[in-house]
Length: 356
Image (cartoon, rainbow, N blue to C red):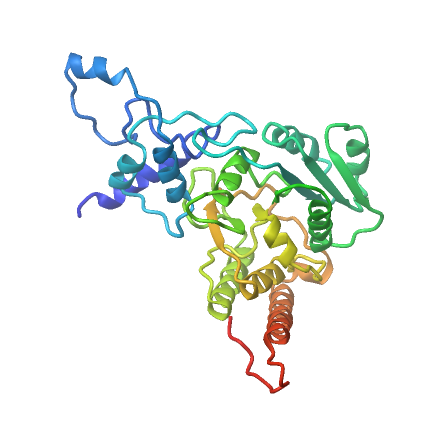
């Protein structure tokens, strides 16, 4: 249809237009998508439109189902159906009205040499979370001194730098040792927006579609906030994500985003052994083996430091890709072997390896 692509771009721009608004508030005061011509209203109709009925739980549930759908439709028809009236922005630390009371979640940030960002990011996170854990993975740039002055967050410090995966494994273990219902992980380098924390929890707790892992994706929807990803990182992400989707029969679009929400059931199913940056690949292999329910939620693609180092040989793209593939191979073999041991017949007869 002529002009349909333009309308889609306009509606996508509406989705991300106001970074201070929740994902549940994407319309202007008229209840129509911005950029779409409005019909002229009579004075009587305008007066009636100013008296809006309260938002019903059914409308909110429909909105949530929209945001956790695998692929997003940008058409004005879908926006009009899901958002017939302007919806209130959820207040900090509260899910949208109409949802059951949310159980308490721990929000964890793995940190390594983030002195430039840690204070600002934590101040933002604390607007949306009451229980915040920082895992300092042996920082040497003054990050530890900044964290030592804060009394509003929990801090666990690794005496030496063990790796990104090790920091997240500590967060997993801490969550399971407490009474939290789940865990939200968010990076501390300024790439992730803490205002989206309630949306991740809402998607995880959706009563119509129980979910075990909500994973952020920087490639589901374009955003005006998007920056240009380094070419080698984008290419490697695409290749590894395609490998995961093909070998694990998943439908991911971003294998490496660190912004995630995990149910307690998911954390109990995951046994993290990979201590480095390839830890997410181990998560996907084990999640597929455990048949965990996974959905993606769109997040902006933001790179504040394109020259950030992976450390040593991993700064070479070819070496990094080979490392990721070796971890994925090993994680797949381990997950399949564990699944086969659990389902092996009592007679001890050999059975073929499963294909996840």
